Amino acid sequence: MNPSMTREERLAAALAHLGAFIPVFGLSVPLVIGLAQNERTQLRFQALQAAAYQGIGLALYILIYVFQMLCGLVMTLGMLIGIILANDIAASHSSTLSEGVGVALIVIFIFCMLLMWGLSLVQALGAPVFMLIAAWAAGRILQQDDFHYPILGGMIARRLHIE
Image (cartoon, rainbow, N blue to C red):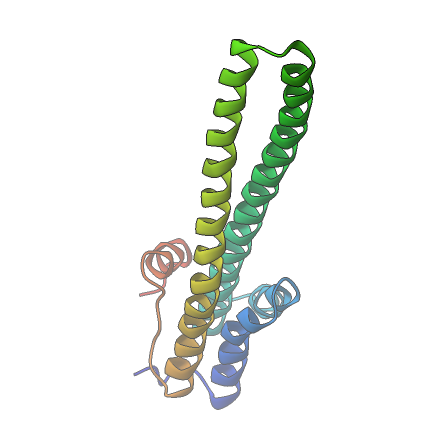
């Protein structure tokens, strides 16, 4: 139970957590709330905790996207090299080296495709879980309970010297 926060502070803290539902722009909500608080209050803690949580989520999303784009680039380059090698094999009627490279390109292509599918699955399952945790945090705050994200909440509480 957290009686130290007023009703308005609890509402502001809940809105900070719910910023997770608006990717990128929602991160500004907890940042503004957290930075507007000069004291080490519970509201500031909740806002900074929500900002860190959303920032980590955004960074992971971008990282997964970059990996998917790199896989797509590798697959595209592999297909272009494969077309060039196919023309080489057709022109020379026999090229053991080109055939070996072609097999390696197929293996790389399949690996990249599986990696892209796996990353897409992580995004598809991770995004709803990410938002559910943020909604749970907002609900706990509105019910006058303390909320700490696992690991992250403790780190921020120690930094702000909040129990």
